Image 1 (tube, protein in one colour):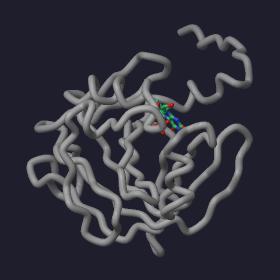
Image 2 (cartoon, rainbow, N blue to C red):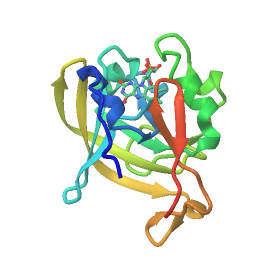
Image 3 (cartoon, rainbow, N blue to C red):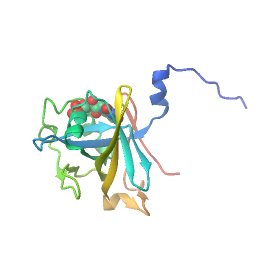
Length: 182
Ligand SMILES: Cc1cc2nc3c(=O)[nH]c(=O)nc-3n(C[C@H](O)[C@H](O)[C@H](O)COP(=O)(O)O)c2cc1C
């Protein structure tokens, strides 16, 4: 049996070597109370107790400005069926359009924060900013999880039920995939 060969890639492509990653819609609100949404793939749990999650957001995003303003955000993982919405909200800025109106996004009333959740997403994690760490061309927001909900039909034995739902995973660029259970 021959051993696999390796090719060196440019260091900035380390990101691609860590994908595919779950696509999460990040919702934020401004001082005026208007909500905005953007997809993010660089999202990770960082602590169970206390419950903390981190998301890397570029200061170029309108979402960055809104999270700084309100100190809150919600994380809404989505199914493959929502790819169209991910492409729309990931190629436009809330500084120019009201994405909730433009794309007919239905919100779900949050339990513990002011920022809405997205109806039909797989789950909603409500966060209050606990810390921010500027990191190169992104900034890492660590959020304290104040509430978390999952769609009943998508959940079995405290796991996503992959026989019922297909979480959307970002491979890189404009390529997506999904997960299957072994
Ligand atoms: C699948 C996908 C994943 C993305 N992941 C991130 C991310 O983790 N962090 C980030 O800053 N931008 C990410 N983006 C880019 C933003 O979603 C995009 O720039 C968006 O238009 C910003 O919207 P806003 O200006 O309304 O905040 C991603 C885009 C896509 C399509």
